[in-house]
Image (cartoon, rainbow, N blue to C red; front, top):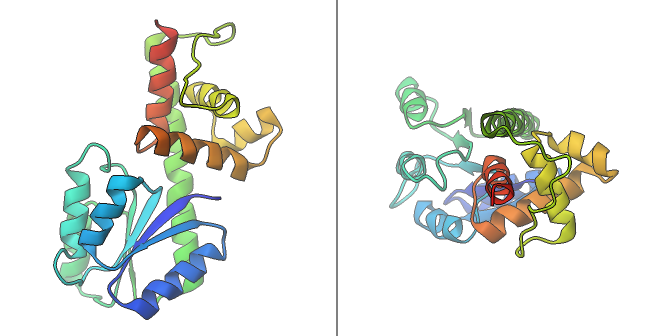
Length: 213
């Protein structure tokens, strides 16, 4: 599967429409009917991005975003607000809540897909750069290292993890290992789920720490 996206909305038809749009682009979609359900879902798995309504009963989108930004496990997850509200005060509050994009309903499927793709690509580049920085700070050279295996990872996942620690993007890893980008994304997603991590940097840090032992 591709990147995992959590969609949160109390309107059933809209929730289904967004999910169908995203699955059409091979995203792995998880849904929740409100903020409270989203929190429960996040306790089980950390998605690559969240698309959320603002106006929901109980925990609204603003409260959900605030909660995520205050938790080290979820603070880096990109958030896109998709809402019927198109008022300046809501946009400003959204920005203050730390969301990455603000789109209005009825949504344009193409616009939503472009916004999501841009955010995910930017986040991947940022994660790769942070991994390179971690590697530089630790002064590590992996060319001849073999002591980075992890019993929780498969052999294929371990190879991908090593290249993540080398600061490579998913596209670069796919080229290096002669596999598809989607396969790389699947391995990374599996590793993050197994360790309850939120991003690639934690994979890089884990590999670096193991090589120091």
